[in-house]
Image (cartoon, rainbow, N blue to C red; front, side, top):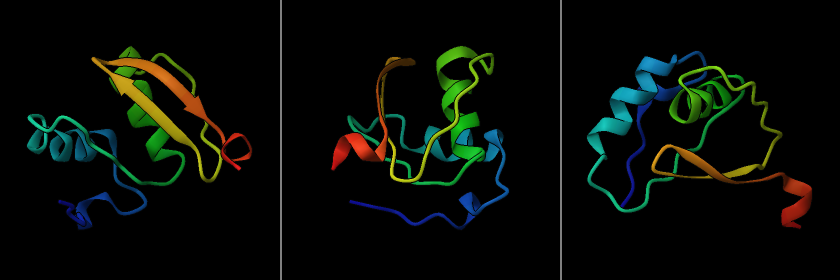
Length: 79
């Protein structure tokens, strides 16, 4: 099942993302596709309350479980 959310266009802030994420909080797996710098800020907020400086490259994949950053793969590692 997937949902395209117009709220999460470039320029959306962390609050916008967290509101959408909270709608899916009972899902076992959730994938979010986005752009920098917003997506990096959301990951930082989820994993560190905003204190982590994170910059994702195009095509990056990030795994978070229980608010812990488990894995971050940049596009070159995926090819």
